Length: 280
Ligand code: FER
Image (tube, rainbow, N blue to C red; front, side, top):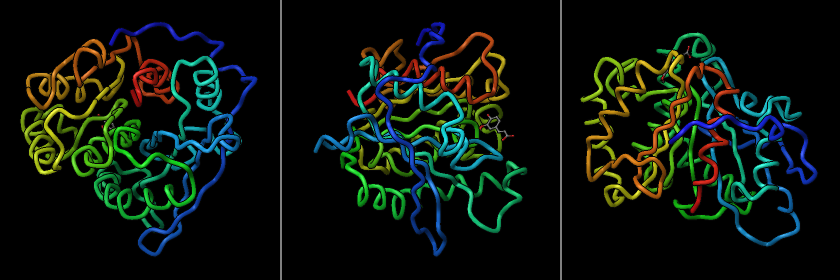
C-alpha cells in the first residue's frame, strides 16, 4: 500500500462524535478492562456494527490507544472524522489488554510480555468476545471482525490470526512481528515463522487465503528489521498469501511509511490508510 501524508484536520474534534467508555469483563477469575468506542448514531439505530480490536504495545494497557477514557490521543477524533467523512464504515472499536494482575514484570520484559500475548487468543475466544457480544450490537461474523495491534500488540495480532482465524477475517499488525519461533522471529527465522503461521492457519478450518492481512510499519521503526523480512517471506506463500497494492489485488497488503518510527502517532496514520478497506 502506498503511504500518503495524512491530513492534520483529521485529528480535530468532529461535529458528530462517537462515545468512549470503560468496559469490564471476567477472565480466568480476574476482572479485565477494555475501552469501547461506539460510533456516532449507535444509540439511534438497531443495526449490528463491525468491530475492530486494537491491542497496545509493551508497557501499556487498555488505555494506551485512546489515551484513556478521556480520549487524550488522536485516535478518537481520527475515528469520528473518518466515519463522518465516509472514509470507513461506522464501527465499534475495542481496546483490551493482554496484561493480567500479578505479572507486572511483563510491563518491562518483552520475554514476559510474550507469555501474555501468546495466551491472549484464548481469552479473546472464551471471555472477551462473548462479553462484547452480550453488551454491544457487534455483528457476529468473522468478516465483520478485525484485530490489530502495535508492537507487542502486533505480536498479539499474529497470535490471534494463528489461533482464531475462524473468528477474525482481517488483521492489522502494526510494527510488530510474530514470535512463534522466538523473540524477533521475523528477523532471525522468517522462513520458520512463516511455516509456523501457515501450519496454524491450516488447522483453523478457514479456506486458505480467506483473510486479509495489512501489516504496517516505518522504515525507521525498531520493528522494521523483523517485520519486513517476515512479510516478504509471507508474500511468497501462495495460496495462503498473495501480495497486492490494495485488498482489491491481494490479501497481503504491506504499508511502509518513509521515516516512520515506533509510535502510536504512526499507528494512527496506518489506521487512516487501512480503514477504508475494513469490512468490505
Ligand atoms: C518488534 C520490535 C519491538 C516487536 C516488538 C517490539 C513484536 C517490542 C519492543 C518493546 O516492547 O520494547 O518487532 O514485534
